[in-house]
Length: 207
Image: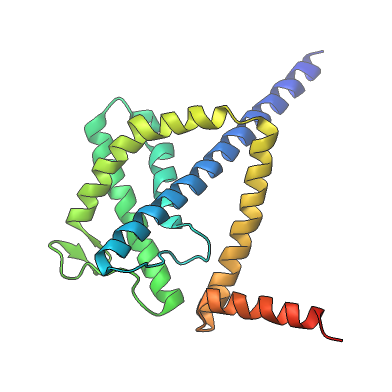
């Protein structure tokens, strides 16, 4: 009897862990999409024409998703100290931005952003102004946005969340693979994908 109870508790614990991971991944996708929308709108207005942002083919800026998820996950236990949340979040997001900038410069052989002209910048990838902005935005994220998002996700049936998560994993894996491959081969990912699709259609309709 004790073994049955113990096994049931273990399964319940694993189920709860899986649910948390699924919710966290859905949050990652939504934050990545929100970051992509914000970047695209800002840069399009700045340049006066539509600008596609992000390394991936799809409408995601993963750096925003990674930074947001790390902030809400790591800083959850210090939510009662807003100033500490601000400092830690500013550091976390700046480190994420720095590492993302370095990685993307290796993959694409170019800088996707450059803060060399800004005050107190480091290697042109991060600067004091953005660090402060990330810290302030993280306060809204931790205390307002993320709790509201979790309440919204909780309204979605568990099975539907699993399907959404699985579909997003497959899509994201394919997107990352294509984007990395095309970057390492010096080809635009959208151009490469369109060529592959065109060849597939031509092959299918060959007599």
